[in-house]
Image (tube, rainbow, N blue to C red; front, side, top):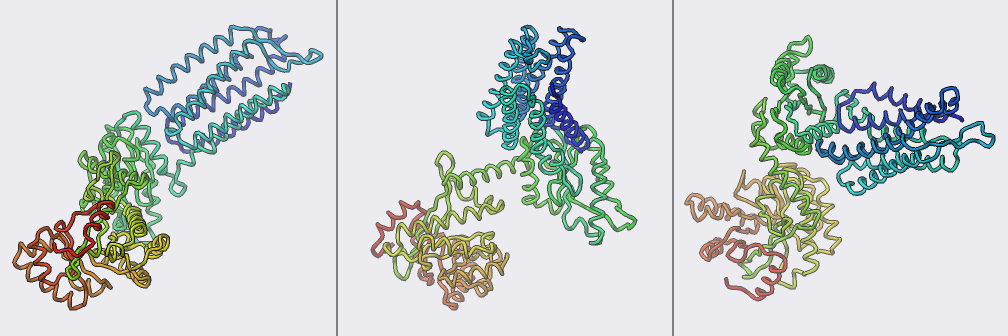
Length: 636
């Protein structure tokens, strides 16, 4: 019988082995499981060749020995099957104890299958002249194939049942591998002299290697350090083991290189990377261009290693004594308190963004309090994302009363979201997080589209309304394509531009001002008007009103309340009203809750009043009912 195809499979596996062992690798359970699949397949292909040779020389070697070798080959097929099962289970059962418990059952079946394979007879199918054995058959083969079938069925069942817990690329690779194996088995069954199962198994290993197990995919090509994907997989495995590990994050901000000439930075950075690679008892990762993670494998020596690392950074990196790099350091003595790999990466972003001390401290020690704050923010972020995905974002409307027309003429759209139980989440719990994480862009877009849909469904003119005010966040104001996006949405719903008034804040006008002004100019050409919201907070001054082409100025609740509580604030507000009126702009006073406050604002010449005196923010249906009940002139 010919063994050339099997030998090609062996060569292919040896080539993969050569490239695999030469690559820098990180020790992960999935890689160990891949090693199991690799060696099981290699031994299987080798025994395939050996069994053919032994059977052909069975008379010289003895019949019992030949059948023993042939049955051993069959058992290697069982090892391939169980290694495939182990390879997907290590991805599904991240808890080591659960994984071992599951695999014990399969190994017990494997042992029973091996005993059965050795115990029952094995036969040969000879060629027509009786000179050559074409293949083996009989009870021993049936036992092997039966147990292997159980394993393969279990593999496909788990990949279907637990697909949410598996890496999708692993599922795809395993499916291709098994499909090749099963397809080759069917071909070999029909053409018994075509021995291709072993080669198909080797090709399957190549598929696993190229799609998942090539160590190069875990390396950053530029630095040679492990990359962010390797960091995630490494941390994920440590958390699954419930193993504690210290972690140092080195952050190279622009200020870190203040003593280094621009033309020297790249070379010095490579020197730093080479130094980090050589540190014993650590695994170093490049998470971002300016962010490096150093995980300590020896917990007891971590503090000592960190001291030496920081000491090294106090010295120059070349002969120029001024070439000193001073990065920021984030130190997590007990990374197990974070609990999840994705939370670990989120934690670093959170600290860099939120902690005022980060910009002030060179070394920042992360403890339970910071982790708890991060978790709360992460939960809110998840809540916002789920609300957006599941359409749990709602718009409430707070009526705005015209003192001149003595009726409701407009309203402010205010975003609300509901949790999974249907309860309204106070905006104070999620607005700031949405702004900090950038989700305010999606949230703001969803609100604007819902407002346009509302206007299309309930034409404002039918209720004596003129426009709806929609807030723009600071981030939205700095978005280059804001005007095009909002015009597209208005055109989608056929909304008249006069029905929309966009509110900007004073802080928005100081950030990305040129972008904001371009957006405002384009929207104003389309017919949209603008209000300056929250006047009276932050760095408020009348120059903002002069600079920004707005039609309405809104006095913040705080400024309104100060008028009634602070004698000096009264004069300031009256002077501001006088100057704003001199610019022919309208004024909305927010936070009006009593008849006395309403009358005072009206006497001051405030053109529009907003507050609980008229109504709290109302959901769509209640707002429409409110408008129905207040169609005629109101004397509130």
